[in-house]
Each structure stands twice: as structure tokens, then as C-alpha cells.
Length: 65
Image: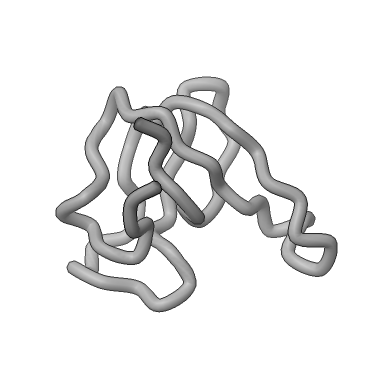
């Protein structure tokens, strides 16, 4: 699994696991396909924020190969 903290590793169409805002306490992960990258910074310590094609928004925890 690749690093979800670097924007350069993430592009639309990739399958990723994200953590939704509501799941930050529980740590529950959601799997989906990236629609849009929302973080403009090159790096974010808690994960790059993305929108999945189903509309959910969260921070990338891992990239699925």
C-alpha cells in the first residue's frame, strides 16, 4: 500500500481507502475510487483529502494496487 500523504501519489481513477470525518474516532475506513483531489498542498500529514465518485469526502489512508 502506498503513501496517502503525498498529493503526487494520488490521481483520479485510483482505488483508495479513506477515513471520513465522522469515522475519525472509530478509525473505520471506506474504500472507493477517487473523483477529485481536494487538498492543494503537496503533502498533508493526515492524508490528502479527496472526493470519491460516490460523493463521499475523506482523507486518503492507503492506495490500493
